Length: 326
Image (cartoon, rainbow, N blue to C red):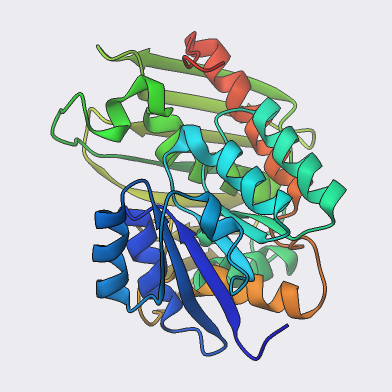
């Protein structure tokens, strides 16, 4: 491994820019390669983020010998093929959420990584935000006792545009894969895999889900009550309720900076602001794993990523939502 972890990025959209911005805060990392469907887009991105190697298309990034790890920032429906491209060329891969469109695709990507013995991780950046790391520590210490209930959700109303990725059926659009995955992942982190899933979802005029409610029941009797919607406005937050108190993770739940703990008749507020935009923490985790010779992260293991995708599949099946490439 070189002195610095050398990154390539596939895609030049919003997520690619956010990740590149966060990566600037990682001392032992550098962005060396960018690939886009068009050379003009790659050039603009390279100029903004000072990237030396510019490629039209994605294959040349995967074959770029200066790259150690690739971040997949392409549309949802491209994740499987792009991740496999990187892995087959021996590159470690950090793949943006949702990991793939469905569990079948996730299995294919994970099988490739394990066959090639190459590092792979879902880019669930929330897991590495300091307040969420602290939340896991509090739960391990049972500060609020046995957690029995999770209440979590959020809603926002984007301007309707049939060409916007959230509304495009063929790109794997819809609110569940884009935003609901955070909630399902948090429930998995706290409770593990659900034993029972009850879901209601309403499809919009482009055929993607816009208004969802999900109940997950777990083996210990715990329940996760989740909602996500494109038809209302509510800051995304989360509450955990145990037999000794509650923890409130302030909005936005995908990168909270504050926790409120209520237990034993006392209230404690823990403020954990972070530098930059927060995407640096998942990059730091990838770097740590690579330097330690690991092929996956213990905080976002591949088996859990697959389990989350299976849960998402079951939720969508209750909506009657299937994507065109399934």
